[in-house]
Image (cartoon, rainbow, N blue to C red; front, side):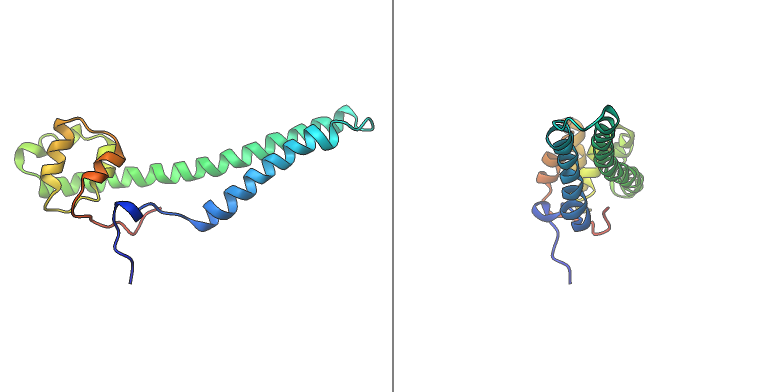
Amino acid sequence: MRESQNFANHGKIVPAFHFFLIPVLVFNVFHAGYWLLFAGGHHAAWGIGALMAAALNVLMALALLVLAFLARLFALGAQDRVIRLEERIRYQQLLPDNLKLRINEFSTNQLVALRFAGDEELPALARKVLDDNLTDRRAIKQMIQNWRADYQRI
């Protein structure tokens, strides 16, 4: 059985990404930089070609690190688009008529944060978020009293 989800534990850690891939790629950047600056750069036997190869290794190491972060950001961006669609459908079912007219006023950040609000408290929180123009995901999530878990997160 899964642990009950709440604000304190809803962040998703992907061990292979957070504890393996990112540390290895960061180490690779530092290793390539060290090789360029200290190991190869001070040897007289190194020609300009070898120096350029070491610089290229640094560039590739940085590119791999950026690629890993972009892959994560793109996945989260796609998830946010799906959440936006799901929540707009949910709002059509749960919000009073006067708030249904304002569904398009919600930003993606607001929709993503409010997805954790239980059905009972959603109308009041949605109104407060719109009326007070709250956009900080963390602040909105902290206002939620009855947490609606999302276990299918990227």
